[in-house]
Image (cartoon, rainbow, N blue to C red; front, side, top):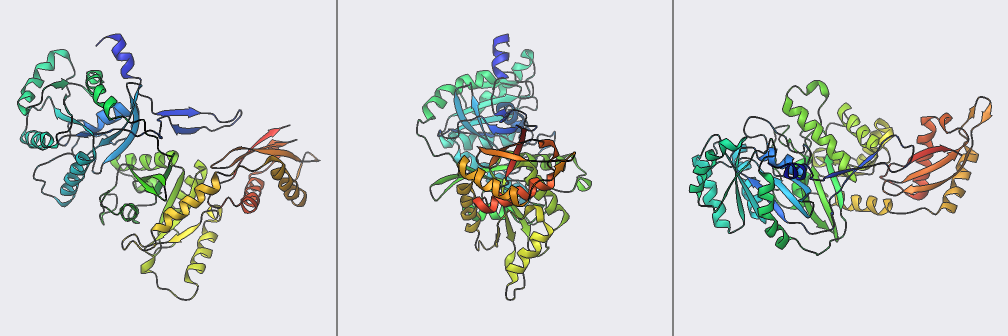
Amino acid sequence: MTKGRQKRERRFPNDLLIDCFPGKTSCDIVTAVDSTAKKPIIAIVGRPNVGKSSLFNRLMGRKKAVVEDYPGVTRDRNYGDTVLLDTYPVTLIDTGGFEQNPDEATRREVQQQCQLAIEEADLLFFMVDGKSGLLPDDQDLARLLIRTRKPVFLLANKIDHLRHEEMAYDFYSLGFERVFPVSALHSLGIDDVLEAAAPYLKELSSEEKMPKGLRLAIVGKPNVGKSSLVNSLLGQERVIVSDVAGTTRDAIDTELTYNGLPITLIDTAGIRRKSRISQKMERYAVVSAIASIDRCDIAVLVMDATQGVTDQDAKIADLIVQKGKGALIALNKWDLVEKETNTFRDYVRQLYQDLAFFSFAPVVSISARTGKRTHRVLDTALEIHRRGQQKVATSHFNQVLREIVSKHPPGRHRGRPVKILYGTQARSFPPVFILFANFPEAIPPAYHRFLSAQLREVFDFTGLPVRFIFKRK
């Protein structure tokens, strides 16, 4: 591989690190892909353990899919947006391994998810294992892909050196015009695949623009009904639903349109306590779920209404607050709760007592299994999104600020009164305000929380964390 080709293969942008304000200690991660453009969909398919997730991660430019050396790691369809060849925005789908006659219930569901991805895709990357050679499952999948009449690129993976390229020759018997020897792990040969796919990507790409959407992460501890909620909202079996805790191990993205607004649903793996994360796969799942909160706009904390607030619910809520995300609580399995007069009101009052720091999040009661009231999750999320777009006029903000501070001053520092002089809104969704003070370092966290609650009530920032950047005048 030439030096120029090596340089280009490392240039797959996905995440952009932005420091929004001078002096801010933390940064926001935003997707650098143009989300307003209609993007071709590329599905990466093949039998188990041929390197599909490694290729997915290589093209994404980061470790999004779970990658391990044993089969069956990717169960659902795993989606990701990236830009190929610095030109073509695409949506990639990493699929579970294809097997013609799976003998377990979960493996049959994986098979179905793979077939759905093939139907959904505009272009297919068919991956085989160059070291293992041609196997019957490769031949079965090849026949299925040929019948789709979609562009198919056959990639013989694990060809780690030029002298091993002859290992890929057997795969020409599958009937495809060209076999691409590649190493997804070492990024060898991938540029040849992308250059061959470029004419198709150019044709498939559309100049049509869609309104900027909303990213909604469905989070919670294991087995509270997150995937069931996603399926209910979509009206189809988009993700695998099982009574076994931990079925969803990757963060799965799905797009829908609701009331004219594009929404990306991110179904995450359940977040367990660290003490219970005994396997490497579980650690990957937790990291994936945490990263999903990072890249969402609003997090939906799904809780089991029959259990009440658990320590793990509180930890996840705290994580959402730390990340500065909009939030709402979905009380799932509400149909199983015994009800009396004011049951919901009393439940929410107790919930807010247990999660006082999370009381800005509105609560909806649902039954993901039956689909009852699940539409309220989207309705509430859209309302939070609408509120988060507002820009408070500086004059109005300072008038309110003066009234709050005059009634409840922030205290004293070394015998002198701490004064918050004025402020302005620096960002929307979530709202961020820059406040100028004489002793900004002396304003305690408790006063931050008090001021946040006051401003949220005045400006109707329900469902949104209100954040401050204090500066010395």
